[in-house]
View 1 (cartoon, rainbow, N blue to C red):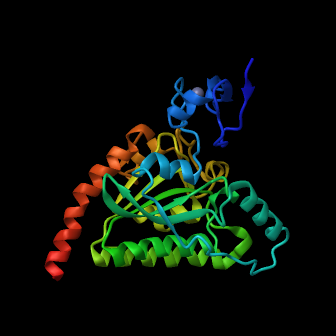
View 2: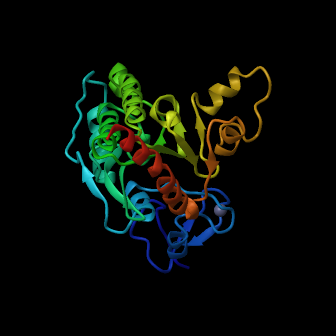
View 3: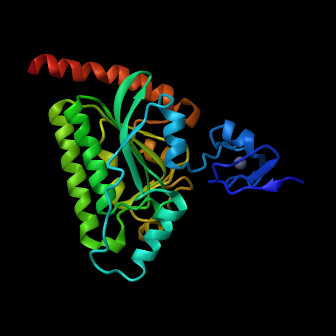
Length: 279
Ligand SMILES: [Zn+2]
């Protein structure tokens, strides 16, 4: 009998098993990683670390991180926030829940932001909001498309109103991209919820989602309580949201890179046309 490994562990080697969070079957860990952490039995897309997301989406070795040293504070002296934040930093090796930078996708330069659910549920505080804003602004400055991978439970309650302010700030940055003709693509991964969904995530030019990703504003339990009629079984899944017209396509992880490449290639024309009009 082999050993069992943590799903998020990057050190998964041969002879080690992981358990699928969807169908609960045992999977060979090396095959699981080769399959981009998608279950070969039930197709469950497991959450990725920011590093895996970048490695498996963009051109090899092309990512250059920006604002890596941007650090937050504990503005409300919220109970237990500082030790929780430090523990998340130790666990993930990140300074906060979002990593940003420049990368190449099939040789096209793109500005990238990736949130990681493993860091305090991917919650958006002042640092995450500022990083996403700067990623959008870099797109405007460098005249390149912006791609944001969302994975967040919403705004970070420990930073109170300062977290909620990030919703307005990131939304204004998206508007600046629009003014500059810079294409902005957002990808809903599991989960994309609350304050993140209600700000920069859902106002992109093109919105993609991974299969079965949880997408919504209030949590499922609260939403179901508020419903007069019974919520459908697939309520708040990417597939349900697609049916409501809130996103453009559900894309399997193995097809994400190719889909984004095609989009960047196509949308790049709108950027060049805008430049031609300006120039
Ligand atoms: Zn499975």
